[in-house]
Picture 1 (tube, rainbow, N blue to C red):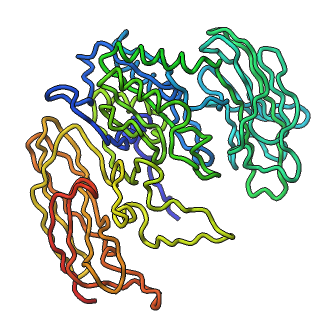
Picture 2: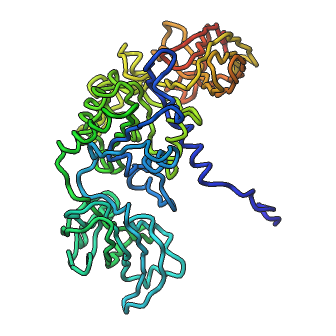
Length: 531
């Protein structure tokens, strides 16, 4: 058979692609004026003399989801790294302020580790450089390492502290561990072994602190975590997973907050990065709250009180409560942005590019405002009593007002919606043509959204409207752009339980074009005939 790929793909700059993807995903949900004709974002790097960067998540970015969402990039650019590289020396001032995670986390900054694989006789089978303190091999062991012969994996190397004081070290996983730091054995024993041990403890289990040592800033020490591999019977894949954990010396939380407020008060603008952690947002468990962990809300509130140009970057994978959102100048949702997080963030904050994302979810002001929150099974059953009224459909049915609506997102220019035309290509495939104009002062990208409102009444209860199509457009200042958006045929159908098939409902629908479900600018009728 002829080869499926006849030539290798063109070379790809992976870091540049990751950077572009990240900034296109950022969603700017708030951007208020800080002085006449100037909004909080973007920040002009040529005019700013002092920029405060605050938050533990600015230094140790959470770039990935937990559990199965974890991969190991060759490098990570934190917000602190990205802004330091983008600004002249002396402009950026950093303070922790508040740390989202006060417990031990996977060893990261300052650690230089390699995983050494050995058999039962101690013979080295292979080795692999580690991006951080986690080993997470699922069916893909280092070259030359047979799973059957693998007995131990040692994460070994050096750790250079970035602060003096008592550092804590720990482990996560099941099996035998021997943890040595600077020549001292902190732990030598087993953790959660036996036939009842949960194999997912290595991915999702609670961290265990094993010991504490006083270390000196900038002075490297040797470190080793030797792990005796557990091989559960009937395991579906050949997996090895465990983690070396670390926590920096604890400082007084009140002193950290005071320090950050002082830094912010003396700056032209303040950027606060807040985040969830793997302990509150990951796979394997449900969230019990939408509140940010630790004292991050207090940090934002206090910084906003002393600096009117406070920008908050939210580093989470899903909605969180933002009780201070109306008191800050700008709110940028950064999600889990990947290895180029800090470089992409610098591009957006400093105006080299605009944020390109729009909200794929509805963000409540409070968890209590969400129309659907009962998700726990009762007596082994979960009743989907909400039916099709989920997401923005549920919010509209409840007539509830969220903090930020589905589809919302701002850029760095303004847009006017000038025309909406509907063209039918058959009875079931209308196309909406939307014309918009860039009325701002810089090049921009707009995501045009078309919602479809169903005819009122009828035999079937339907959402007030649903997203039927969208498209992104780009235009220079003063220019127009036009998008032809094919409307989803399913928007005109309902599920017929008796017939076990989709059934089209004829009638006059209303197409609504706009910037979000809460900002619909133009309307036009869409007439759907009988099947």
